[in-house]
Length: 186
Image (cartoon, rainbow, N blue to C red; front, side, top):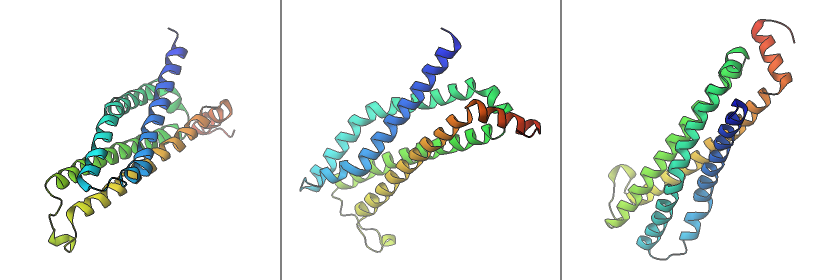
């Protein structure tokens, strides 16, 4: 298979997996908890949410792994341009940092979700003095919502920086970036 076709396949995998990741995160932050709030019993509600996330993670975990792999593939495919074009490596570094942030907020959300489920399964009545007597389950749920929205924000920023990276690959931008790297006015 010609290199161009492989590069295109890698880019398609990268963009599709990013779309799936962002879509799932946005659905979770906006719709899942709201829909489950109609379930009157807290245990049943948390169990339904847990089941939904468990099913989603069967899709999202390999999707995120493929996204990371495709990101490495894109970086490798563009290594020459990244070295030659001023700003290319910096944009890639920002994109990598945002990907790390998105992965971190994803894992934090998963941890907090499991923690909420565990608290509710044990009765959800544990009080914490450091929370000023606030129910620990409620505190975890607030932290979970914050982590979910941080995940959405990181993923949306990845889309934005990906758009910038696409613009950097336009012939005019590429020529300007290489000329700038070489100290030539473009």
